[in-house]
Amino acid sequence: MTPERLMHIYLGECDLHVEVLAEALEEAHTWLPFSAETIQNITKSQLRILDQIAYRFTKLQDTMGQKVLPTILELAQEPIAPDSTFAEKLNWLERMGALPSSEELKKLRVARNAIVQEYPDDRDLRSSAINRFIDGAMQLNALYVFVSRYILEHFPNVENSSE
Image 1 (cartoon, rainbow, N blue to C red):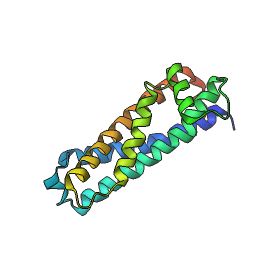
Image 2: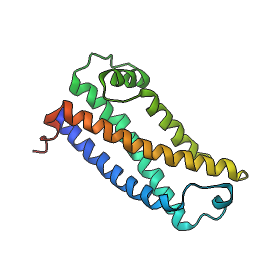
Image 3: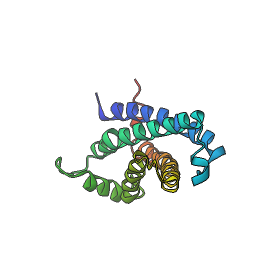
């Protein structure tokens, strides 16, 4: 399968994650941000939405990091060493203009890790971690929009590779 066809498939996967993530964020927007007081009264419905956000955030971040970003380098035929670190690849993508900031993607990994911490005895930390994660989810959606625009502008064959 050609890199253009693979990228077309990967963008389709990401589009689904972005769409569902955006819907969940929109729904969550009505009761966010959490505070130490409101976090103790989280409903099952809110928890389901937060779970949906966490799942789609993870799937989008993984698909971008493991599939989309490496395929950009392949499509661009960039001479980056195969044993380069992920950070080196991110820096390369930033220099190419495919990422607005490699640091932004690294910060999103921190946001993802923040949600893993439960902080059962500290409502302030728990609410703060969830609010940071929600902000990170919105930033990840925006980052994907930036990256997908770059791809379609620089590799127009990706758009037409569904045959």
